[in-house]
Length: 399
Image 1 (cartoon, one colour):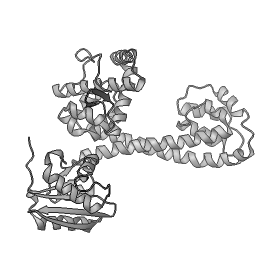
Image 2 (image 1 turned 180 degrees about the vertical axis):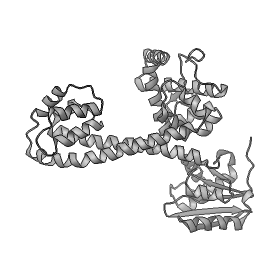
Image 3 (image 1 turned 30 degrees about the horizontal axis):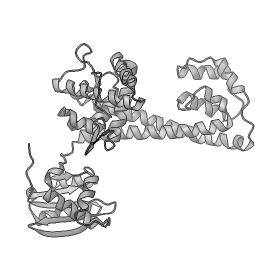
Image 4 (image 1 turned 120 degrees about the horizontal axis):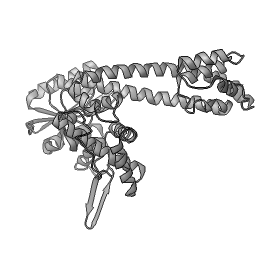
């Protein structure tokens, strides 16, 4: 269904402290700056209302979310977004010098919406549940990165002072290992066998306590500087790691609750082999609309599995799509890696792609593309995954 073309046009250049707004009403250009504050956003909405009725307006932005978008939509204005790379091409219509100016960008947005309305995408009204789901999945991802970063710092500390401890936990990223390091680098003497046995029992680690004690009693590197600094670093890093791990588990639990509220859509996604609650939450948070519409083309573009074709004269190149949602690309990659381990058909397709000469990452993209198309087929039929019904083709167009 085509969208109604507005008769008045406005462009908003988003800024951290000030927003530049340009409005074109009856061929007359109006420009003004507004502060990034509650009063500034309310004043912007009132100013646009005074220029023309809200139902005749179209407001263009680059960022399709955030307080400016919400303020405009609360005020009744239809909001449209465009990719920054496309806006850069529209900017060349007004200047070829490469100069960039916030007021000019607002004017470019307004004129582009006026002349090329079909190039813009309507920003839907925000769904509070969808926003909460997206932000929670992003919070979990952010906490995962923070946990990995601090685990790497602990690993660097141990490799300089007591590398033998890393034979117990190569990544230095497990809670039982943090407690062990805190005890070893704390007040002497070294822990006894009964303490190690209780530690392994609490965390359900199937390790020989005598072997662990032997590693703890082995001499570390004789480096006076590291020996003096390592206890301070360990005692500082372990509490941070515990807090981040606890917050990540809380985010995961909250994400699981939100996913359970998504109903049949989440159930169909979760039925796919290799998908867990984190992947389901990421897909729902980042691509809710194309999933509900079962739009395979939009999903492949968002996830980066659809290739890009470049033709010019006799040359013809098919390359990997770079412009996509990086969170969805990472989620699809993790899905493909897990599907290889838990589903024989996915393993067969991966091996087939590797046998054709594709590298590991290319084969993962090909498998992810087919898994995504199978998910779309399940969504269109309104059925969960059935191993006896669905199959994966042996070829893929992803590049």
